Length: 131
Image (cartoon, rainbow, N blue to C red; front, side):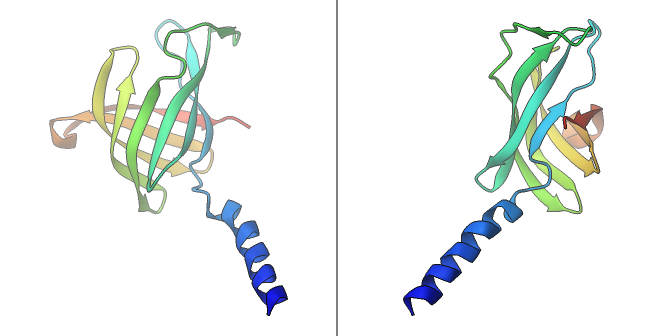
């Protein structure tokens, strides 16, 4: 009996990584008007998804210091199935504003949108997965 319980526990422990949400990982934002871009670490936060600005880069790809590193960019994003996420918030550093947000995952591309007026007007960009 003891070996059955131990075996079941081992199987469960090995299955935990398989439960990770496919959107989790590091994503590179599109360059802004100044050519700078960022890496955003996306992870589970309870039942939702959140993302933190992990690193900032200049247009030449050199890591730079930024006051925005460590700030939460995405939060309360709820998985909706089929690679879609919604009901979240996103902070846009270039405008220092928070928007209602939704995301859609397709392969190694994450389309991220910030919206106003109940989702009628949105602006967004495609983020690429960092390997």
